[in-house]
Length: 219
Image (cartoon, rainbow, N blue to C red):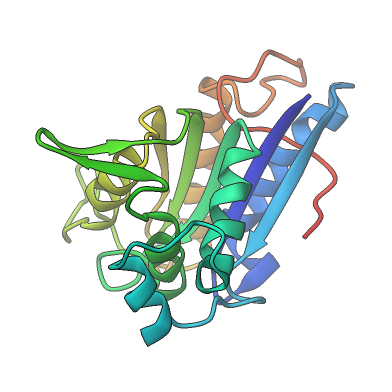
């Protein structure tokens, strides 16, 4: 049975356009009679605690993985280990990731646990898996209408590669502050790209997904 880890962190919650598209992806197997499960991590409704001095001390010392100071980190890494697909919905904040997602990164990118430091650089210790990232932004940072930089995509790609996740595809919803018509066009264009990638059914026909899918969200 496929298991998807679904992470989202928009301040708009379930009203966010990225979240709604993610739900369409997650609901696809149910519509097609498939079975899958989801681990959902809502970083806005249930924010992670800030990194503490005790955690930093444990991280830089010879501390066992089952030390209580690593409890939150272990829980988040376990969610990755117990999933074979990853779906992330991210708004772009000031050219990069929201603070809530950066904190998730700081918990899961952990030396000796999710990556090893070698003479050739950092090597990921987690299994690769198909990963889809939906990025929502008020402006344009890709394509012919781009007028701002995108630090989010290369950063997230590099971070995930550091822990062993390389099979990553980005899908963008851009120009979401340019009025209702622009929002509708952005969502339709993103939905078409998701259909082309096999994440959504085209013409009502079920097809084998190329990227994460799941149903029955639970915390």
